[in-house]
Length: 291
View 1 (cartoon, rainbow, N blue to C red):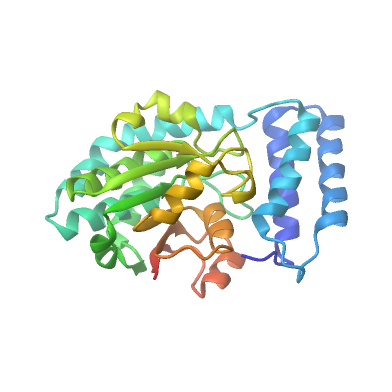
View 2: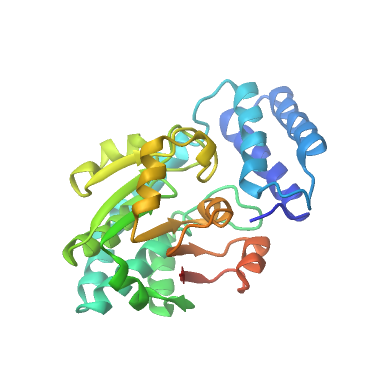
């Protein structure tokens, strides 16, 4: 996804939010904002082919350097894990209330709803305390774009690009169904902390390595998947995959720049620019397969 003029304000508001998570020192927060403005001035050039995620990576890396904080979202990630862990028994019951294709669709629906538990997205407020009620409401509404049935024949060798911490627990419902249907799963997390994205810390906390065939990382703290910084093992896995599942907006913003197919984008369209790029409405749940 190419940079959009609407992204500028969102990018700056996100680094401001990140700075406020790390410190209450107005001078430091101001330096982060100024660095963000400088980065936008120097690098924000719509129409030049730069992707939104590449631009976001530049801004957030400059912010992290000023903050001298490797993980400003750490408390948010801990909280999101707690919220989803409490929700998991109920989510599992909803998935189990189905047979064959329904189980897979239910698992995907639950995982996509997990993409709602996000922080710092402009105009998108998350009520952590009321997330269980929101989860139920969204589950019964279902997916607006539902290609889950088309995904089932492609589940031989799946690369699953995870998104947020906490949310990754709901991803395990999909992983379990892929394994039940005889598929292999390579789970991919970020190579280092960035925003509230899942990392190897989440894999270790939840013993996710025991659920999948392989665990890989993106190789860096780049937002989304930056193949220029990715290990060879990840590139090989993407090349041989029978299906890539790309979770969340950041992964969409980067993976849509490459030519990997088939790929299923699973996310909530929390941003108008992303929704427009997909040709869809904002604030809907989707599992869209591109073949």
